[in-house]
Each structure stands twice: as C-alpha cells, then as structure tokens.
Length: 300
Image 1 (cartoon, helix red, strand yellow):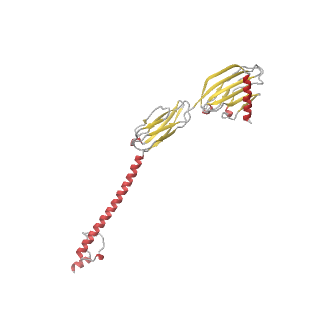
Image 2: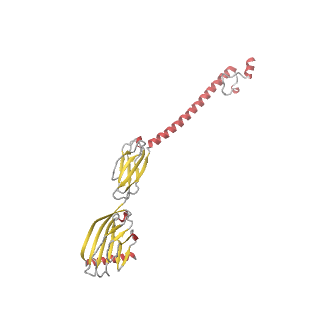
Image 3: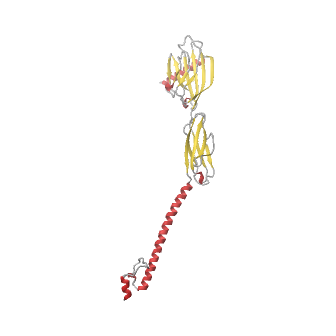
C-alpha cells in the first residue's frame, strides 16, 4: 500500500514539474558531520500567503548503494509523512514545514552518507518551486580490521599479509608491525591497501604480526601468528629420533646381555662337565664366594 502511495506521489510530482517555473535550483558543496552527531540539511523557500497545496519532498540516494533515490520525508496536505526506510524516526522537519523545509537527522552513521534532494512545489502561485541538492559525508573511525595470510608456511616461500577495515571515513591507512622482545619491527607504514608481501621467508619470519588501521578519528588493530612448518617438522623429527635411538639402545643392551650370559654358561659347562639341561643362563659374579654345593664338588 505504501509503495503505491509513493508511486502516485512521484507521478504527481512528475506532472507538476512539467509545468513548473524554476525560481531557484541550488547545489550545496556538501555537509560533513561526524558519526553520532546531528546533521541539519537546510532547505529554505519563499513564503506564500496560501500554502494549502505546498509540497515538500526529501529524497536520498545512498552513496554505497546503486539504487534509485529513496523518499525520506514528505509534507503533503498539511501533514508530515515518513518512510520506513533506514532513517526512520531519526529524520524530522526542524521547524514548521509551512515556514521552512529544513530537516535534521539525529545520530548519523555511515549509512546516512549520500546525496539528499529537497523539492518544494507550490502550485498556487504559477507553480513556483525550488530544488536543492546536498551531499552529506559522515566521518567515522575505522572498524576493527581483519588480518589474514596467504601462502605456504615453508622455508623460501612467499607469504602475503592482508589487513582491511570495511568501514571508515576518511579512508583508513594501514601499518604492519612484527612484535619482537627487543622492540617492534615496522614492515610497511601508512599503506592504503593494507597488503604486505614477505619474500623468501626464513626461520626468523615466524612470529606475531600486528596491523593498525587508522584515520583522523581513531584506530583499531588485529594480529596474526605465523609459525613455519619447518619448526614443527624439526620437533617431530627430533622426537621420533629420540624414540628410535632409545629403542635401539634397549635392543642392543638386551642382545649384549644375552650373549654374555650364553658365554658364561658355556664356560661353566666346560669347567664342570655338566649336561646342557642342568645349566641355566643366570648371571654369575666372579667375586662371589663359592656355594656349599661347589665346595662339596671340589672335595669329591
């Protein structure tokens, strides 16, 4: 229903403009406000004794949207009408619309930036009318940037670091740093694109990298950790090497003990002429005193 009313209104304005005698057409050089502040968009016109058929229409063409202009606020038949678009209740006529077409926008933010148009039509007096264009810029600090890295984390490879804030006016500038215990190491300062390329990386490339996005209103930062695969491979190789060396040492010691035991058994059999099944492989200490059985055998 509302869209039909808007179409009828625009059609009426189109027909009215065909018979309009333009008394004034002005383009404002621009209005600059800071995010969160109040924006006042002037639109003054000549006062008439009979304003019963006065029409004031404000439209808006967003800077970041490729669309047709939106109707923002309308004064028609003595009543003020707003649209349900982004501005909502934040936009209003600053004074009585019969006296002034100036509007105000409360709590501005980035989506409010763009081209505003005020159209005043009074068909009573020779269709005298006025049109005014105002370009609004909303300054805002950078949004928290996003840090990312592309490339193979291997020795000799190439790594691309990217930092980007999606909002911010004036356009944010970027600086990259590598954190170091001895002091931060600047990579590239005051970049517009936020891209840094690390060529032929080495073991020293690993570490924490910080990007700062800033403009005249503030700054935000993000960081990314780089850990080359070579470090992980060396750690894994070292762990595997220690495990293998330990295992081999245990095996060699076991074999050596077995050989020594077999050699000792062979000596005992030869000296005592015992059957093989009566000799067991047990460690024998040469310095131990002879047992009672051994003394008996020697006496016999």
